[in-house]
Every structure is written in C-alpha cells, then in structure tokens.
Amino acid sequence: MQLAQREFTRGERRWVIDLIINPVQVSCYESDPQNPSPCYTEFEEEQFGAGKKQSWTLEEACALFEELIRRREADGWVEDERTESIRCFHHPDRSPPAYWTIRCSDSWSDSVEEESSPAGETGANGEPMKRSRVQRWEFDDEEEVRSWYAFEVARRLSEGYIELFRRSSEFSELGSDLAILSETVDSGELVADSYAEPGSPTALWMEHHRRPAWKPVTVEGDGPDTASKFSGLPWLSGAEDWPECPACRGPMQLLVQLALDTLPPEIGPSLGEGLLQFFACLRTECELSDENFMKPYPKNQVRRIIRPVGAGRAVIPENLTPLPPKLITGWTVRDDYPAPEEWRLLKDKESKRLQKKCIPFDAEDLSIQFPTLPQDKLGGWPYWIQREEYPKCEICKQRMRIVFQLDSGDNLPHRWGCNGVAHLTQCLTHKEVLAFDCSSG
Image 1 (cartoon, rainbow, N blue to C red):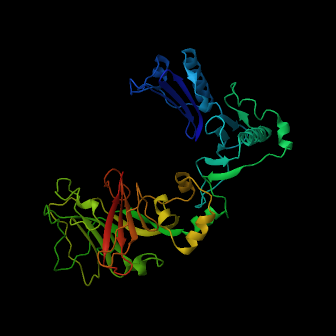
Image 2: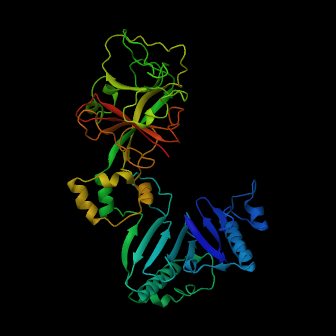
Image 3: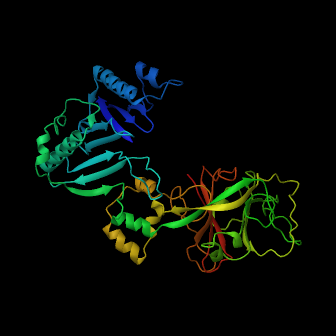
C-alpha cells in the first residue's frame, strides 16, 4: 500500500518520493530531461546506494521520508500542487495497524480517492486480504468535494486515527473541526471500488463464474507407468518408440501424464478415458524451439489421449536426461475465478445481467480478492500473463477449454518463455483434439 507520495520540481526537473508499507519501503527518484538516469544527492546515495540498508521500521521510514523532503526543499525544490491534497493517517491501537489516505486527483476536482487497509477483510478463498482497498467518489462541484473531504478526515480523527505527516497546505485544516460530523454532507457517487462487498452485484458476478480447480499433491520419484505424474516413465505400447522431435530427432521430454479415471469425479469423466500424455522437445538448440511454442498445435510436441492395454514397455532413451519425476498422489480443490483478461468474454445471459449492475472496479486489485490460481492445476480458469489466448479446435473451430496448467518452475524445473504459464486445452466436442498455448511476459 502506498502510504504517502510527494512530488517536487525545480525548473524542468522533477523529484518524487514514495513511502510504502507491507513491507515498509522508502524510494525516491529524479527525472531530468537532460539526464534520464536517476539522480541521487549525496545524502540519498548514502541511504539508497548499492549495498545500503533498505529496510526500516515505520517510525524510521517516516523520519527518513521527512528528512529527504526537508533537504530537497532547502535546495530550492518546490512541491507540486497535485500532491498537496494527499493526507496520510494511521491507527496505532489497532492490530494489525490500520492505515488510510485521502487525495483529490488534481488539487480541486470532481473526484476524491480513498485508500485504506481495513483489518479483518477476507477474500473469496477465506484468506486475509494482504492489500489495500481503493475507492473513488465523484461529485457535482468543488464545494461538495471540499465538504466530503473534510467530513471523511473528521470521521477518521474521531475514530482515533493520527495524521502521519502534518504540513501546511490548503487542505491541512480540513477535518480539524469535528463539528462537521453533525452536518449532512453529500456522499457523492461511488464510481470505483477495488473491493466487492459480500452480496454486492460485483461479488455476485464473480461468484457466478467461480470454478473448482485442483492442485496436484506430489511426492518425489516415479510410480507405475499408468499413473498420473510429472516426467518419469510414461506408458508406451509394445509397438511404439519413445516420441521424438521431428526437427532435431531427439527424444522429447514427458512433461505430464494424467490417468483420467483417477482424476476427481467432477472433471475426470468429462475429459475422456485412458491416459492424457504431453511430450515436448525442450532443447533450446532445436530449430523449432521458439517458433512452435507460439502456436496452438506445435510440431515439436505430442498431446494425446490413449487407452493403455496390457503392460507398457517404455525405457528412458540413452540420449535423454529426463526432468526429475514427481508422482501425483492426490488433488486439493480450490476456488478459482476468471482473470481480468476473461471478463470481456463472459457474455452469457446471467453475466450480462450482473455486469450491468457492477460498480466499475480496479481489475488488478479485485483479482486479489477473487484470484485466478497460478502454479500447476487441473481445470479452473487459465492464469494469463498478458492476454487471453484460447486456441480453437482444428476441426470445428470452437474455442477450447483448459484441461491442465503448467506454471514455470512449479512441479517441473522448466520455464515457459519469460517465466510464463503453459496450458493444455481440449475441444468439448472433439475430445481427442488437444492444443497448447504459452502465456508469457
């Protein structure tokens, strides 16, 4: 949570300082049109230079924050009007400590933004929400903004909040007269909220799209050749050789094998019968290494569902060093919610009805309350890095559904692109059609 920010100018140069909590951090930077590199003063270099201490208690951080500002002001830097309205408060008697900031977007304007760290709020998964809540309110005129700003400050002061950085500005006296709490003040219109109250249209909309996802429970080592596993020995029929890459002719890595009849009953039968296997060539020197991993049907992969009959005969090829095997011994079910990239795609009747009632929300913050699960998982919603990239069935051209997600460095020591996430998807109609996508930074 950003607890405080101040901006200063001198000529065409600009200096910004931030105070952040959870964890406590202080940072500053200067932008100079003639010198784009950050410029530290001698004192700032002592605080932030290479190898210097960069962790403080809140008291130490506040003292440093004010000292940095004092030195810049003494050197002729002038505070930008845009930051005069930012006021920061904390409640020292609450555990964990509660923080609150209030700001106008540009000096006096038609909107006010609040950021707080309310204690006791939990996300949809029942876990504490380790983040702040941001709300934005809009008003008809400047006088309404002024009155509401003063009312909110007075309300917090009456609850025991203490202002962290008291300084003289047009806003510094607003709220000091608690008599305003007995007045009727226009509350404005809530136009953005990064937290959906339970039972609100936004929360109902997200709950409507909740899906189960299953995280694999694993143990080190291999298991039977028909077991669900990461890497290890797959089941191969007596007449079949280990799959090889058509470009470099090297053996592919078995990345995951799923025994469909042992999967959770809520999802296993819908995927088909037998073993789902995913092999891929991971050699960086292979000519298909980069190009094919950007396509839904890479030539340097084998994605299939087979029905094992009899004993398998797989043997690790001599020229393959397999990834460390992990046996999947069970599944842990978790609630999963669509990523912000999905929201524009949700066009069913109930989605449209609920979406019309939703207060506009901050996608990044709301996704913490209603998370899309990262890491390896079965089912659920895809975790996208940049944008949604559902493949289409090569037979019927319909959008495919996620079957399994492979995250960088989770159960397999492999990274997809720039710490990306890979997905195996399946056509609902043509279950033998499996596709691949890689969402990467």
